[in-house]
Image 1 (tube, one colour):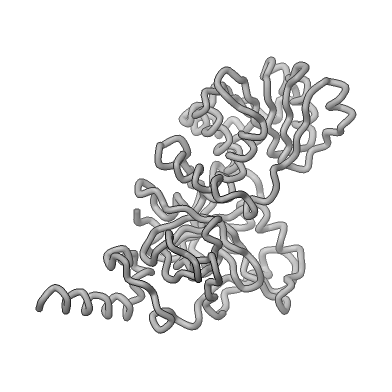
Image 2: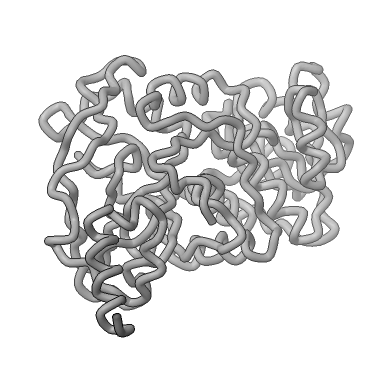
Length: 356
């Protein structure tokens, strides 16, 4: 058999076996996916009505189609975010059904009009355009090209799935807070997905980082370069932290109020949680108080590409706390909501999730 015929045979065999799901799409080089090569239906976790995790059900739904500037991703892994639980309490707008989830990693299987830099077969990670029956808790999902980046080869799909929302949020907050070498940065809730990402990026910029967490997370946090871990229940966070230049708050509540005491005049407080810090309190301490940079899904494309570069350089790693199969998404969402995670909780959608 000559090379041309061998390539055609391999292509047909891969299409028959859903090659993207088996992680071999990249072997076919620049092959462009056609509508005939993709299934019409898929299995996905669908939210039915409003409530708790019990409203999540495994159903069969149509495979979405990418529009202009979008790509269709064969999802290998998806990450859980706190907002996924919050959304369960809201009635979906699409005939009382929606597919949850924003964070994905997988392989491009089809491009929309105008897409030239995300060819079929490329491994990617990013944030799904989560609307109606398009979401991360599925075998196929559509994403805007601007909300994706090529997957670093050193990462598995499982690891890459946890980069999107927390990475983009952390990059934008670090920029907003003007973190650079020589600064002392206190991060409240430093062991979670956003907190640990903030810590790594701040350390990569030369800052000294300390943070609040449960003592059981101390070993992990020291491994990523955190200089001091403060027990969030100590009741005297400012005294233990000493003077800091910047506070980044991912938890809110009483911790946020305590942390203000560690800031001197001209210090910066950035709150990305529902904090109880008021403008009057900020003015009284002569500190600059800033809010969240906005939804990660609306971040500029440069932010996602910066996350990818940090990961490629080894300056941003995703610690996977637990993994669950897609069918146990409700259990995964509940565990993540309980708030004691170390890094990210990941859904394994296909057997290729742990491939590089």
